[in-house]
Image (tube, rainbow, N blue to C red):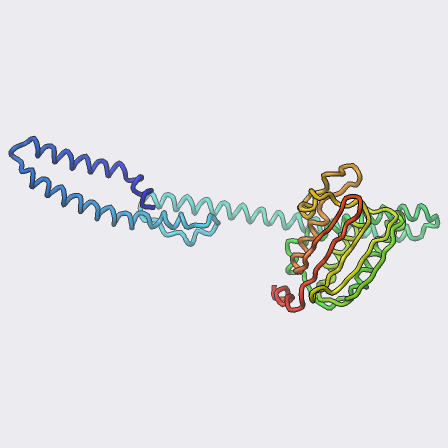
Length: 334
């Protein structure tokens, strides 16, 4: 700050030095003026000027130091009040700009909340004809047509469900309810929903749960498992999907293993990124790139660690490592 201040006041300093040199030069060429007296006066002027610069530095930089320490947020309460007319101009400009920005943010937030409410309302309205459609599909007698329509209905249902949870992700902490969960019931429920898809693709499930009880949020854990099972079914054909749980180093680990197309090594670090699909196949499925991203977001809120191990053309294994029981104290206190 010292160097910046000296550069700012450089013209004043140069003017002062010029006047000192000029006064000394005049005393030097004018024999009637005592040079020693002028040098003494010049010395006193320099001392007084240095004291003056130090005092003005402390006073004039107080406001700018607070600006330098400001975190560039819209909270300007920590900025010191301006004293000089120019500081007042800056202060008034900052007040005006932050007020406008806060007003714009409030408007955007209101519009975003309205859009979110409209989306949720639309999803719930669409669910009504979807439910009616499901009932009509179940009454069909032709098995082939029934299976095909059930599969298409399931695709629409999963997309709506994903969109519904995507809109709730930002406020997931307010939606958590930690309770004892029977893992087998949760998994069987998710598998039953995927039954038409699995039947069409000839996919079965091999389930082996060494640890069946755990603490978590049933709705959001179900959503995470649904995304992983959906991925496993989507990229598998005529093969069993293994769902297993075990206790490893005191932690419950759930693995979902498929023998589908697998994931390229270069894609593994990016599969949880928003909107990422694949760099190896852009023609097979109309993937949105949101399923694993949302699953990771929900898992973070539940303190669940998701890891993946995959080999191209050999299959993929997703692992969910659940937190120890005492770690949920932090979640329930959110």
